[in-house]
Image (tube, rainbow, N blue to C red; front, side, top):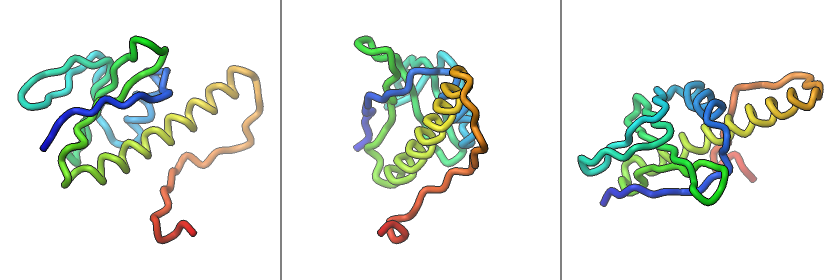
Length: 124
């Protein structure tokens, strides 16, 4: 059964999030809508991927951060959604760290922006 899950995150920069999503192949709409069960849900950022993955991001009213709104109820997509979300959040964390370092005038020697996620078999 499909349903929308709302998960808190530490993401607090909408522009960096949009950049991370685009770098992972998502089309991004600020002040977009996420559709579930034929109902449109307004979100601060809507992201869709050609693989059929749809993510929404809404501001958490109690914290200065964004919640991710996603349908984790489809077993056929659950793994790909989790992998895509993991890649997006890793890329966001990298971009946030680089941005923070730049704002503090810290030198960054070099960064490989290609993200690789080890498979369970390669992690020992």
